[in-house]
Structure formats: structure tokens, C-alpha cells
Image (cartoon, rainbow, N blue to C red; front, side):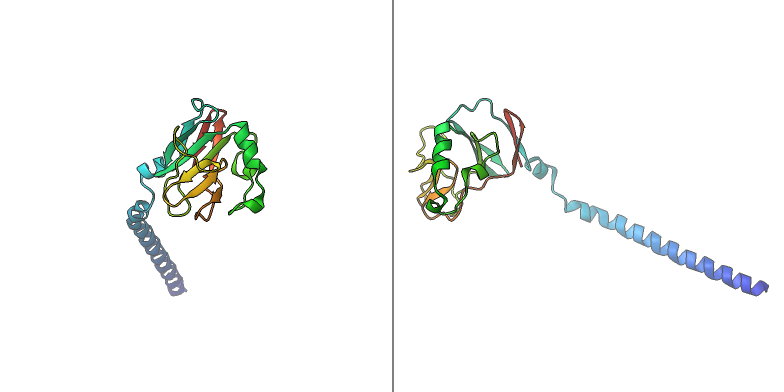
Length: 181
């Protein structure tokens, strides 16, 4: 009777030692892999570029500015009521990439238009943000490289560009401050 108790205890101890060794090996392996896994995370400078906050207070009605976000220009325009009305009067059938103006702005802040300023044809930077720059036939932006014309909502209206200027993810933090990204 005494021999069977010792055999059972030995087997239980052996199982425990195997499990403990396997667990310690797993913890050690994870600890050894952690620096490699952590190196795959974005760097601090990259995370800093993930979003940008812009003060809108100095931008007058009818004025546009260009800011950089993730290495790309972003156009922010404080549209006039005339620009909004013109953009909303366009019939979707008249557009290359049909999209309503209301779908490109934040509800209640229709005057603020935020766009990635990269032409959807070959990645050029359209003109129309700085004063004195040509704004094309539709009062928005014009890409002189290949002749794409965008309207006051950033929608492609004429030229080889296949799509509208992209609207990035953005949120209004206050009435005069927007966070892009």
C-alpha cells in the first residue's frame, strides 16, 4: 500500500515539474520576443504626425489655408454662402464622381471644408489655396499638371482625375479648433 502512494505522489510531482518548466519556458520565450514585437509599433515621431490640430479663428470667410498632415497638404477653406450654394446647386449627373456637398462637410459647419490636397489623377498638388492662385473653371482648385478642375466642394468636375479630393477624418474640438486624423 505504501508503494502505490509513493508512485502516485511521484507522478503528480513529475507532472507539476513538467507543467512548471513549460510555463517558465513560455514566459521566457515571450520575454525574449517582446523587444522584437515592440519594435513593430510606430515610432513616437510617427504617432505625433497621426493627427494635427488647427486653429480656425484667423481664417476669414472666403479664405483657404494649407496645413501638413502625415506628409500631405490639407486644404481648409472657410467657404462663403455663395460657394456653398453653388456647390449644392450641382446635379449629381453632371459630376465625374457624384457626391453631394452635404456629404463632404460636417453638419452645422457647412462653411468649413477640409480636404487632402492631392490630385486624384497622379498625386500633384492643386492650386487654389493661396490668394492669387488660379482656382480653375469652378472656383475651387485647379491642377495645372494635367488640367483637373475641382469645384468649391473639392469634387472633380473636368479633367483626367477619376475621383474627388479626399475628405480626411476630422472632428471639431471647439467652434474654432479642428483636429485632423
